[in-house]
Image (cartoon, rainbow, N blue to C red; front, side, top):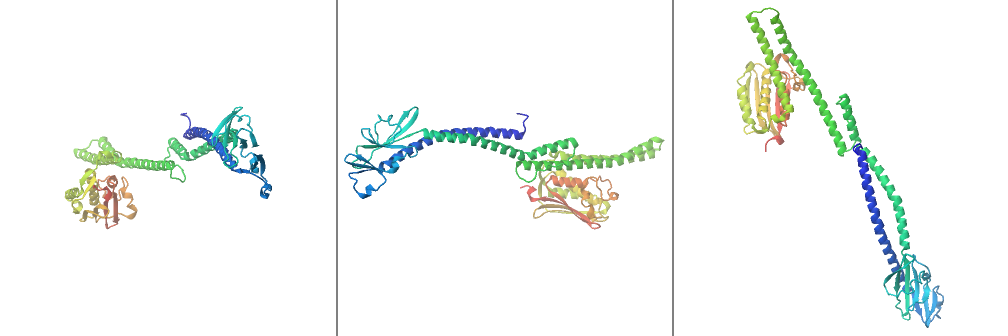
Length: 472
């Protein structure tokens, strides 16, 4: 059973359940049909006798012209005649009707078991049974109420064999039709199950191909549909797409990190080899150590930034979200960073009081600090940096604007890439991870970073947080 496919298991379960239902239905139909047919036989007998009893009339004389021309039959009885309808002669629906005297003498009609019912007393309106050679017969008597017929009885007889014949025919038909229906339903169920489970099979094959070849670009072709299986297949396609993107990003990150670390390591190794080749003066050794120290600090900062990135992506639980006074945090950071005045750039701020968000204070501080530091690094000497925080119609906006060199349109998407620096001559001690970290922090809080910039006119970075992500 464990080796069967899901399609085979579903079909087998469906077939067993269907056979049980059909068998139960057949038993119910057979039992109920037998009772219904027997009741129909008895009702037919009663109806036929009750109809025929009014078809027998008594006439004191038959000299009248209208009676002589009738096709009915006349039987001499007492001082007159009994008129019997012509249809009375025929057996109707296997019901035999006969006209008897109270003494038991047969006057007219047919009774196939007359000898067996000879000792059966007449009972008006009562259904009686007689067994003949193992066959049950129903007997029903009715007494005519017309004047002159007080000593007569009408007796109807029928057997249950006609019901058994009909029931046998129904049973035979059921034994042929029901298995065919079961077979058709099982085959149809198998085909439907195979069609519906095809995306799962494709999913398994795609996963196996990815395992064998490592190609995360493979996708499952599921066609049109919106059932559970199609949604599952689409979810896996989305998962493969995210895995592929994450894998490509990881490869790019590793390549960029290796490239960024290669330069300071090369400088350190070159400085060490130069210092060890021949004796140096104390001043030269000091200068070499200072070079090694600067490159070591650059590497340390780069590694720390990379670790922060990894923690934010892989260990979000290290940064719990809580109610944070963004207005107070912004004012505090701006007051501290205004003291830098790098390149004689002035920093001013305009903060709307009372703005609180659900966020992580350390990450929000890191985001604003990176934006202001970036504005200092690429600002115009003697220029100005403006920080603003306020509510908008759809949420809040925290903006950092400068009047520096600006960013060309073709570079505005690239600057958020890891290790990308638009102007390496102005980057200073930057690692190229600042704006990438800013964008990641914004996404972590459910917001986004918007950029407006033009070459020579400065840049404005805006952190937008929608209303739905604000504390209630």
